Length: 85
Image (cartoon, rainbow, N blue to C red; front, top):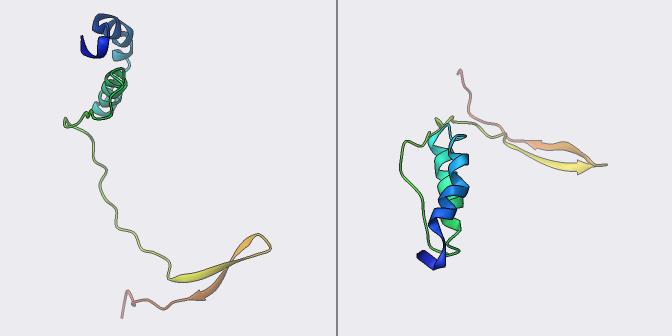
């Protein structure tokens, strides 16, 4: 028994939650909760077919702002590159 745990009892407690797992991320979360029963600092769950969101490139507003009377106010706009020269 690891750390004196009754693993059959842990299994029995987590088994009903398995029915709610729909994605690999859900399974990883469930495994993390279950392994946390060990109360150790170094444990890890990883791998599997975890969904990765596609990175979407974004731009940032080239501006400085200030807060005036509790509202944002643009203080300065910085010129950027022209999209269509």
